[in-house]
Image (cartoon, rainbow, N blue to C red; front, side, top):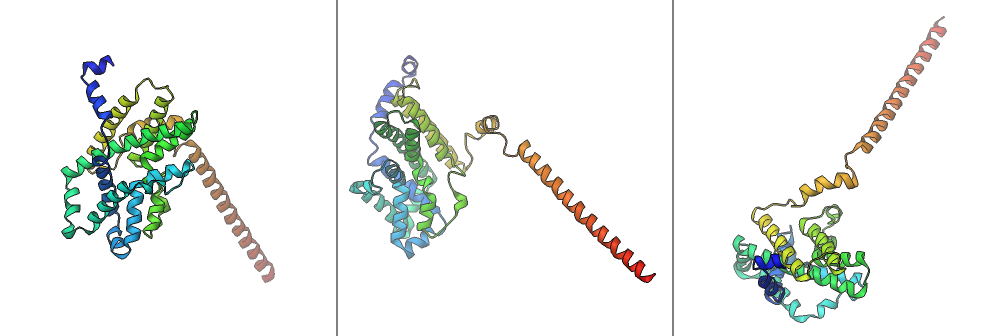
Length: 295
């Protein structure tokens, strides 16, 4: 705390923790979420062909994390849809994004300087959702660390984890795009954030929740702004993962696979040699029969 006081951050962190996310930050979250939906191939045609399917996809993009978390905690998956104000706001954003005359709304929110502001605001909501998810899971399972991490992770990246379901609503089936197999930066960051908030909730991390929310939000917003501005799809965690993962989990192209490939090639060579030898023996036997017959 003395360090934060020296940097004059105490008041800033305190004010940030009291900052309400509804409605301004929530609207920014809906705008960026539905903007990413519109980027999907065929999403615009779907909105004309089947507005109901398009609207359902938009609701999954906006509220998928709440739906998945409710399912995991044994609550009704449509519980959040009783929040009329949020549903109406998200629906208004969806309608303006896809049906605004001259595409004006889309052009305004996709303008890069404006988009970067909304991206940063979305990360504010994401981190709050992770923290709330951990607190909610802790209320149900006081010592369930795995449950707390799982619910926090789902709260932060639920829409990505439900991407295959959302694709089915659009008539697309791409199992190879499973988010767990190919994690994007927000999904990985949400997982790491859920671990940090779980440790903090369990009093294993010596930092207050308000400080953790502030600094993790700063990290997430900075990374997403940079990645959006530079159109980068890489991960800031990649260098650290490339260094640590081979020690913990081994190299995916390591000695074990090479050893297996060696035996596989050896067996292929042995089979090929046996087939060749059999052909030679057969030809030799045929030649001897012909000679004997001629004699």
